[in-house]
Image (cartoon, rainbow, N blue to C red; front, side, top):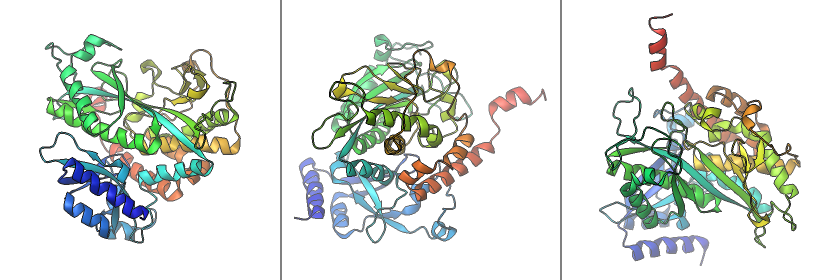
Length: 456
C-alpha cells in the first residue's frame, strides 16, 4: 500500500469510527489565523482521492486588516490569485468539540498544482526547518506555555478592555499570581475548556492563574514541534469559543490592557537523537554539551534579528517592558526569569532552554520555526554563548527592537536565518507586516487626542 493510500485509510477510518459528517479543512495564514472551508465528510474523502480540495492561495497572505500586499514574485500572481490544493495531514485529524453536527477538523498543507509544497505556508516553513534537523538525525522537542486573558465583552474597540465578572459577582482588580481562589472564579469556563481539549485530543497539562487580573496560563506537554504548533493553534480557537459561550472574551493579544502584564508564549526546547532518544543538550556526566552551548549562542545572536516572527504586531512590543516581567534582551541564565533565555534546573536527560521572547499573539508555527532556525544556525557556525547571567538582566542594555518598524528593518538583513526559513517566505512575510504597519501608522490614537488635542 502506498503512503497516499495509507493516509486516505487513516482519514476514512477516523470518519467512520467517530461518526463524523462534516470536516473543517484548516490552513493557517501568516498571522496564525485559522482559515479554510467546511465540507461534507463524503465529499472530503472524494476530494482527497481526486485532489479537488482547493482554496484561493491568497488566503496565506491576507493581512490582519483583510488586505492583500503585492507579492514579491510579481503583481500578476497577486491579481490572478490561483488556487492551491489542500492536502490533509492525516495524523492531525481530530473531533471538533461543541458542534451540534458531528464535526472533525484536520490541518492541511498548501500544494501547487504539480504537487509541490507552497514554500510560504507557515506549516511548510516549520517543516523546512525540521528537515534540517532530521538530516542530522536530530528531533527538536518543544513544550509551549501560553498566557492569555479573559475580558468582559467589548463591542466598541474605542473603549478599553475590562476584567470580567467572576462567579462571586465581582471583577478582579489586583494581581493574583497562582491564586487558587482567583482561578476558581472562572471554574465552569475552565472545566469546559478541559472537556473540549480532551475531545479534541489537545494534550494540555496544568492551567494556572497568572499575574494579571483574569490572566491565565496553560502548559502543553512536550512533544514534536509540528504537533505542538497545531495544538497551540487549535487551543486558541477552542478557548475563544468557550469564552464567548460563557459571555466573556478570551484574548491572546500580547498586551491587551493598560497597567496589566502582557501575555507570552514561552517555548521550552531540547534536541534528542532520533535513534537513541538521548538528549543532545547534555553530556554523559550531565554537563552542558557543545551543541547546547552553540544552540544558545544562535538564539542570542539571531533572535533579535527575527523579532517579527515572535512579536508580529505593533501591540507585541508593548509587552516587552521590564516593569511587567517581560524580557528586553537575550541574556541567558539558569533558573533566571529576568533573562530572555532561561535554562530550568534539570538533570541531563531533561536539559532544555526556555525561549521567553515570543508573545501569545505569535503564529506558533513561525515562532517555533524561528527559534529552531536560530539555534540550528548557531550549531552550524559553532558559536559560543555569553557567560550565564547572575542577577537581573533588566540592568543590562536592551538588545531587542522597541517597535515593529525597527524589527522589520533588522529582519530584512538577517541573512543566515532567512536562508534557513526560505527567502520567498521572508519577503512575503515582510510585505504582509509592512502593509499592516502602514495601516496602523495612519490611525490617530486616543492617547494623542487626550494629551495633544488642546495642548500643542
